[in-house]
Length: 150
Image (tube, rainbow, N blue to C red; front, side):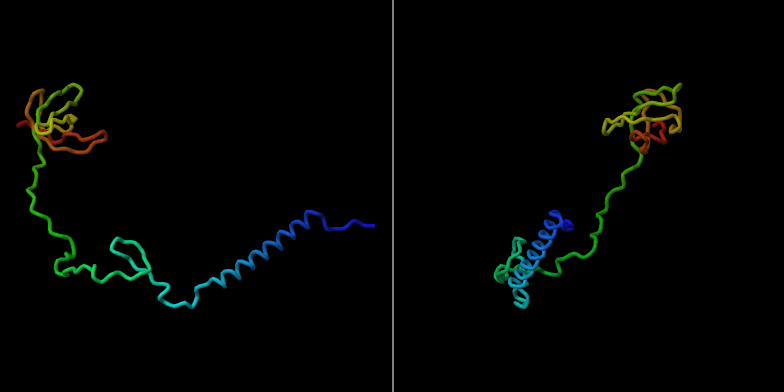
């Protein structure tokens, strides 16, 4: 006699598929029984209380704030007149090597050091000269440019 073509593994897979179908059918029946379809619009409404939390009860009208519409500003407020700051800053040359073509300037107000290259110098400068300069962003920070003696 020939052996049956259906193996144990096939039987197990078929049982799992059947159980999965039954579970799916049970869940469908359960969803239909618990469905809130047709309960009405009131069951779907959610309210926000004064603290920003969602609730199912309407807010208390006595806690409502009145806002005067004329106090609401629409658009961007005008900028206040600010005095234009001079782009030139003043400082003192703390170090300058004319043979290498660079140096450093110490600003008077903030006491910060700025790198200066000979290409950004309008007049010849030496150490301890008082100078006026503008700042420009360089690769490694702010550089002094358009440097001239005061």
